[in-house]
Length: 221
Image 1 (tube, rainbow, N blue to C red):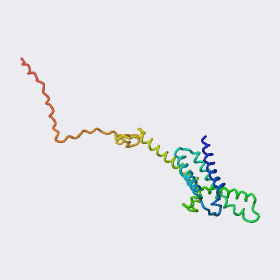
Image 2 (cartoon, one colour):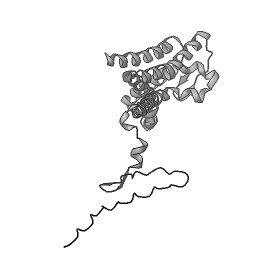
Image 3 (cartoon, rainbow, N blue to C red):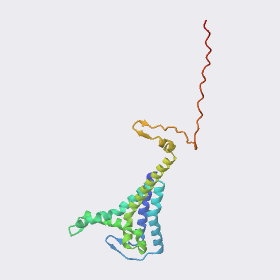
Image 4 (spheres, rainbow, N blue to C red):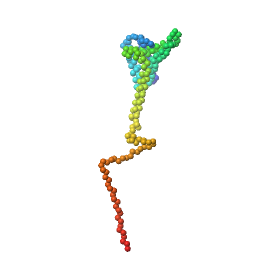
């Protein structure tokens, strides 16, 4: 059941991108931009999609510990960024008359994936500009992973702090601090001290010892 979250999120992003590709002309094409006008409905759904993949789904997955939602977003982010990683290295194989047919087909598929990933974000170029919007699909994976990892780290340290505060064994008494170890295997015992008394202390004299009465000596004959 948990892996269904991965499939649902991954396919949702692909379906939204394909919807734009099927019914609307591409604005971002690999290596160039084709200017066109954006309708209000297209613009509204583009903003909803951007907020969904960059805020709602990452925050919800991190807060609810739905790792597979984060994995689905990250997987789609890898797919969206894959053409930009691979196509620059294929320039030599695609140049010239003796280009490899397999390389040409592979490049066509990668360019199609690039246009599909960029299509939902095209209407927001009127606010953010072309250069900022063009890299948005490649930001999906790091944003999803950073949100999830950051939330889990915050939750871990918060729970550790609360457990330390609520543990009675961690509460130290001041008396025990005064009686800390002063050496290896030895302890100091605090001596009892008599409270000081203001004024002069007068001590009573010791009672005199009475001498036993001696009987008078008997007369001698």
